[in-house]
Image (tube, rainbow, N blue to C red; front, side):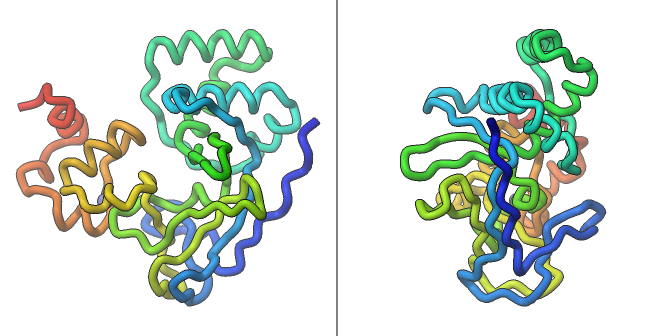
Length: 232
Ligand SMILES: [Zn+2]
């Protein structure tokens, strides 16, 4: 039922150890506008406009529904960061483990990977979420050197395009919020949004430079409380 995924085209990037983790880095110098990579998703689910919040779980279920897709996603060395689960998420994961006869612990781990790596896609009226293993190895930055693009000629392909000259060996990063106006926000507003949508505080060079000194000393938990309005 699921067709083989065309091989990615990645002429200017490779995955390498960078800053303590495996990241997408430039394998050659690239000019502004250069196509760094074009990749098809190894898993994808279309969603309705009001389903963004449930997208990772809907994507997980679509992965479970086909043995081939499950094997394909499980075989990838996707980033693993522990996602905060709500009580509803736990119940859904347990129900999915029973329905698809998967080990609940392994399934929860797969969910964390799906939640940490899924990317939103919107092109030609198609809105969905998927896993693009190469593209998902690039980090967010509030001063990005690349952006994602889509083209009607290659439905579901994510294109990674340089937005300024990139030197060989530089880490590739893009604005996870997609929207240019996000980059005009101040440190607090940007990180409030990133924490809400992606559960991380940004450590890009711009955020390191703009982060207020009083916040820099706080542990992550207290910073999260601060953003939620429950901190000191
Ligand atoms: Zn940042």
